[in-house]
Image 1: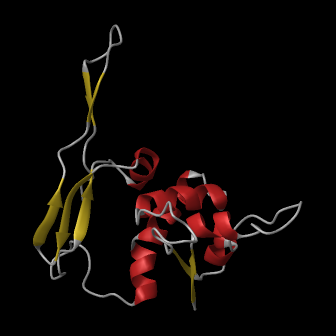
Image 2: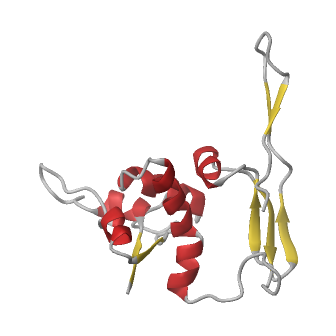
Length: 161
């Protein structure tokens, strides 16, 4: 058994027609994970009448999911990253994904040191590969600083395997 929660939509739609107190929330993600259920986060309602703010951005979904599920610990944030990557692939029955030898080389290279930084900063997607073909590329983000005693430019390092 597995479960898919949709943090953006669940938090918006649940209880919208209630008087007070209004119901807000989504399913019990941490409890399901603790029970061994594979939990993924999804994102339906992209630019439709129910949720016109949808962007299809899975880092945004992970960010909202960790807040709504109150999973802001280091371990919880990593679990939320897995919910939009590894667990989502498991729930959908995908095989051959990833960057290990023998895989189909479909992945997104993020400008972040780890999953927590990727979610926290909504990391720049440096490159998007599908089955070994480069589909999209974005230059690395840089921040210009004007603080005495600090470097003039701050850069972020991409995730390394």
